[in-house]
Image 1: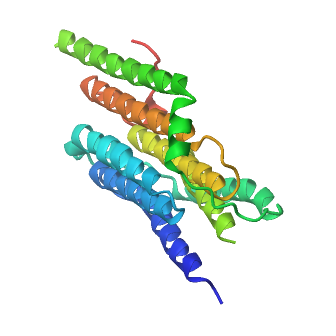
Image 2: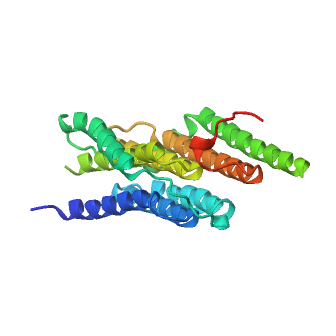
Length: 160
Length: 99
C-alpha cells in the first residue's frame, strides 16, 4: 500500500519535471518563461511538503515575484519566436546518462532514519546572523551585475 | 522512502537542466536551463536539511537565490546587447569574443 504522502509527492514531482521539460519544447520565449515560473512555483510546493513554509515564502517572493517578473518584463515581453534550437535525441540521452550517473550511487546507500529538522525562530536567527559575510558577497554580486547592465545599456545608447 | 524521492527529484531536475544546456543552441534557453539546475540544488539541499543534517541551510539557499538573481540580470543585459548588435541567439554561431 503506497502512502498518501508518497502519491502527493509523486504528483508534485511529475508536475515539476514536466514544467522543466516544457521549457525546451515550446516555440515562444514567453511560454518558456511561463514554464520556468511554473518550476519555481512547484518548488515552493516541495518546500511546503518538506515542512518549510518559510522557505516556500522566500521562494515565491524571490524567484516567482522577483526573477520571473524581471524575465517577463525584459526578455519574454518581446515574445521572440524560438528557432528550432533543441536536439531532442541529445536531450533525452543526456538526461538519462546524467540522471543514471547521479542517482545510481544513491540507490545503494543505506539512509539513516529521517530527522525531521525544522526551522524554528531561534534557529533562523542563529543561521542568519552567523554568516553575514555571505550576504555582503551576494550584495556585491548583485551590485556588480546591475552596474554591468547599466554600463552595457549606456554603451548601446552612445553607439546610437 | 520519501526522503529518497526528494533527493531523486533534485537529481532529475539537475539532469533536465544539464541536458538542456547540452542539447539547446538558444542563448536564453541555456540560461533558463542553468536556472533549473539552481532550483534542483535548492530542492536537494532542503531535502538533506530536513531529513539528515541540521546545518545552516538559509545561507546556502540565499547564496543560490542570489546567484539566480544575478544570472537573470546578466541574461537581460546580454539579451538586449545581442539584440542591439543584431547578433544571433544561436550560440554555435557566436565565434568572436570581442569586436
